[in-house]
Every structure is written in structure tokens, then in C-alpha cells.
Length: 103
Picture 1 (cartoon, one colour):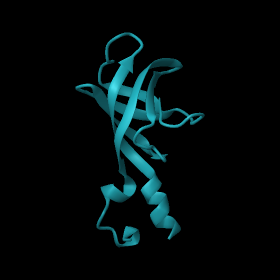
Picture 2: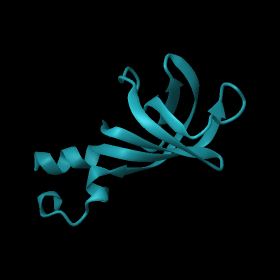
Picture 3: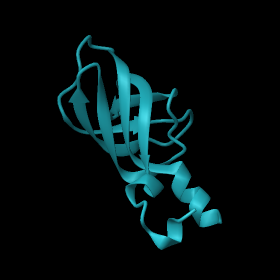
Picture 4: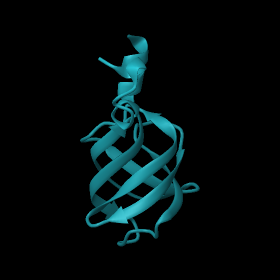
């Protein structure tokens, strides 16, 4: 059962909306780091800008990225801005037919 719970709480991709950028405009698509929880270590990710927000694809699965919370984007130690998490793709949703993850 613990395996199922762990996969439900880990995600490698998220969609965020209502973006606000320190510079006034979205950064270019590319490699950055992000946080989805307070005091979390920076997580390497790929930024894909979309209208009114962005998509993040993380190198490593992130623990408990949750819709309604903030995703904050960084370039080294500089905060570029952030947005509200609208949805996440958990490891379970990425592999729904895996017998090990079946409910």
C-alpha cells in the first residue's frame, strides 16, 4: 500500500496558471530550477511557457506538488517569478496501467 501512496504524491510534471514575472515578462523556454513547497530544495526542471502560465517538467519526481499552491521559478539564486499550480501529472497518472500501482 505504501508504494501506491508514494506514487500518488510524486509528480514529474505540472501546469501552472496566472503567472507573475519579476521582469514583467515570461523567461524563455529552457532549463531552470523551481520550488513547489516552502523550504524545498531547488529542483532542476524544463520550463515550457504557455498562455497565462507555464508547464514544468522536472528531472526528478517532486513530492506533493499540489494544485492551488505556488510553483516558483529560479535562475540560480534569482527568483524569476511564479504561478499557481493548476494540475500535476503524478507518477501514478503517468503509468495508470502498472499492476504495482493498481488501486
